Length: 375
Ligand code: COA
Image (cartoon, rainbow, N blue to C red; front, side, top):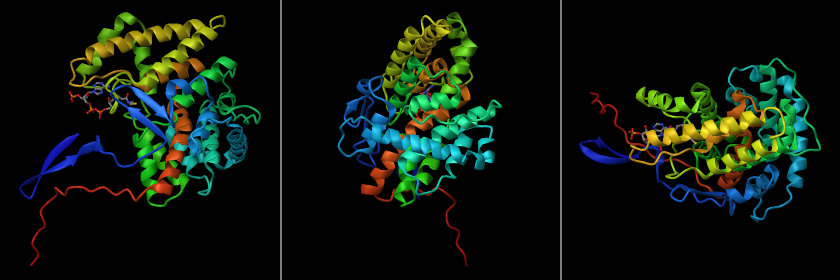
């Protein structure tokens, strides 16, 4: 947003929120807000999610070539990293006792050695997040399995059902949110890296940025909203009440997208597939019912927000909430699981910043008290 402030009697331009300001070049991802397109290292998100594993896409971001590989090498490094992180859980009691999952993740991540590799950091976040959720439920942590992919390991460590359909759905989620241009947490990570600081410090800063409800903290409140609505018929009154109270509808709107967030479409498709795969099993009706309700609430929110100057459509967090719930991820863990995926993007950006970047140091306009004359 561009605003003008008066400085010494003259108007000066200020770009609040750095909207539209290009501060770096990246080969990692491209967000086209007008057309609703997300490209990750040369591939449309639709072509990656559901077709590639988290380790394959993380390896793609970490590689220079831009070619999708088997991800096997990174898979081994992640398995090793999970085992190491599990061993250090006993030293993280205070961090993992924190009430908020993002606070716990940030505190635990801060204790990693600053020379940790990218794989070690990504692996550790998954171990810490699941150990925190287990501890919160009064349960002991589960040791990570060594011979499975990262998505399956995460579900296993959580004590959730790790069948093929759920693992595939979680992989689709992790891939969908792995990177997204210069979002707030990635920018935070790059700012820290630009000072010459280490990877762990960058990731700790990024977790802090992701925690905010305007960024990665929305999916929990989206489910709270669906719970409050319960029936499609009540969507109209609920949304109207929220807006009348001056509250924002979580999971709606985006700084860059002027159309529906393409990731919302990808995740909606993943929920459909999961609901179909689970159709013969107990609980499957709930997934489809939840999806139907979510679509109705989205339509209602879209309609009531249509009077705004800009298009306010569903963002990634709207269907993240429905998908993660269907997979069996506890609500309090939605944002930490987002961090587990986005960490790969953060670390790819950190390395890019270290290789090519300059110290990030914008300017500000002083509008404070005029200097007092001292005699
Ligand atoms: N509910 C209600 N109104 C919304 C809204 C929402 N979800 N998102 C934007 N708006 C409105 C604002 O109130 C503002 O209205 P006004 O001009 O009448 O004051 C207008 O749209 C522009 O909002 P602004 O805050 O300038 O846009 P932004 O680019 O900074 O906002 C978000 C982007 C994501 C922060 C915003 O859409 C939001 O808060 N969404 C809800 C939280 C969320 O889902 N976050 C996850 C993002 S992936």
